[in-house]
Image (cartoon, rainbow, N blue to C red; front, side):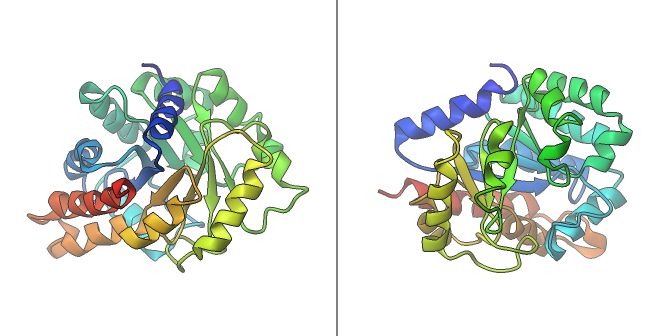
Length: 275
């Protein structure tokens, strides 16, 4: 299976199962490269349907304290964008089907530079990109070149994306739409399921793409509620916080770092499989 098609195939399989997918977010290289690789490799068996991997960046402006700290730990451990792609390449040696989406900011991609990054990402087995600070007006910067290479470009929609803006947001999007369920930074508050369901329905009137919902989703109960009106549920801050709680002195990986994160993923995944 090639890059780009894995996302479509996974959502098609989820529709066949009659359930929403679990999208897990962790920062590449947190708390170190080897531990990050072990967690990544364990995510599919733990129940992650799609994996979002954060590209560590020094100024992650849309992210709350937990994910900001994760980026700092990864950078302090020597993580780079090239090593992030190497992490995906290693994952692909054992998993050819689970979609991997890189999420982050444009600066590291721009200085890579962009075209070389996209070629390397395709070769590594990246399926999609979420670049939060590149608006639709700049689609020729990275969105369209990514799509030309078969890499999905996933757009964010928010509660403040109005009827005039929404068609622009979804116009060149591919893979899925990521609905940011709250205003503000990641992990700041809990979404209200009924409000989320109404917004997802509104987005679906403008696109045939699946809609995954994230920001503020932490518990199996929240996952189950949100999933009733969405194609996917994204959990990030809760996993990053669980990882942080497992670390030892100097933010070194502890004996339970990998297992603690994967156990939480299992509990979240099970919430989507309860009939």
